[in-house]
Length: 135
Image 1 (cartoon, one colour):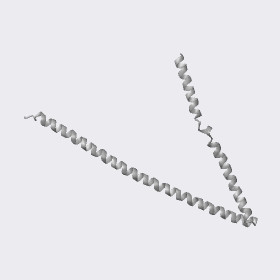
Image 2 (cartoon, rainbow, N blue to C red; image 1 turned 90 degrees about the vertical axis):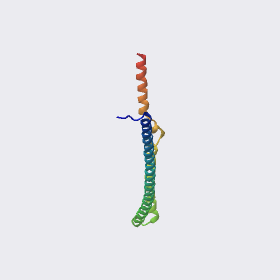
Image 3 (tube, rainbow, N blue to C red; image 1 turned 180 degrees about the horizontal axis):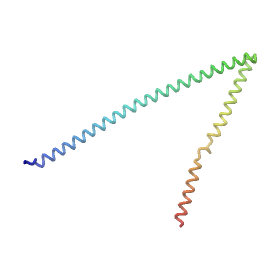
Image 4 (tube, rainbow, N blue to C red; image 1 turned 60 degrees about the vertical axis):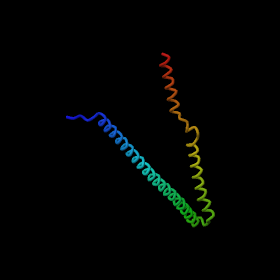
């Protein structure tokens, strides 16, 4: 049996390692290209979704205004005054808006943003550590 010269086997190992590194680099480049393409597609889908939501909101607002106008006109037939019916509908909508603002203001106050449970837990943990260090 003839043994291969040491330099030939070393060259073949180096060639194999170099080939493996090139292949790994190609795989990584391919994966990065796939990631970039997928992210671009996802961003495009999100943009289309946001545009559709904006259009839906616009149509909802227009539909709501048409319904409010219809309510005013219907109420005008009952009270025999379009101005009075507009005042009644407008007043009711304004009252709903004021109630929603008051509820939102209570929910959005700065005190609701303070992490009280975390603060309490940190104080308890600090006290427990002090007790452990003290004893």
